[in-house]
Amino acid sequence: MTSPLQQKIKVTGPVVVTANRLADGVVVWRTAGNTWSTQLADAAVVTNAADALALLEGAQKRDTDAVGPYIAPVERDAEGLIHPGNLRERIRVAGPTFDLPA
Image (cartoon, rainbow, N blue to C red; front, side, top):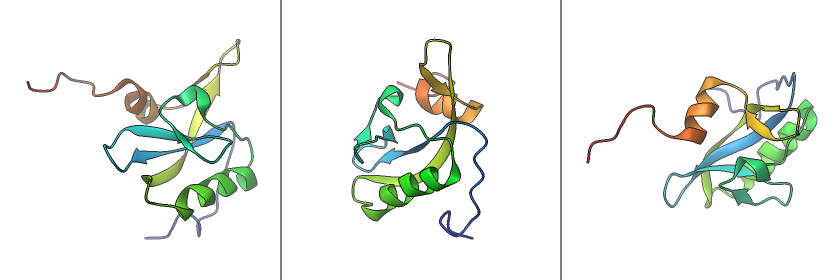
């Protein structure tokens, strides 16, 4: 399998870098301050491949905080708020699509 850093990155709109926190698996997003946040609103949003790759590389340098970072699409609404850009990311933000057993 080819590493994301070796693949050609194609960015056609706003994107963020997301991963899962290593300690508990919670979904996190990379911020402009090179930290992780559990709030999508805190994510650094970029619109070109070079910036997306830089965010991804920064996220992969220290893999003791989060695992599996990747570039994910987002959308901005009329008020400028960030929303997941595809079904996978909507599910990751909202949680499971079914009730978990007790």
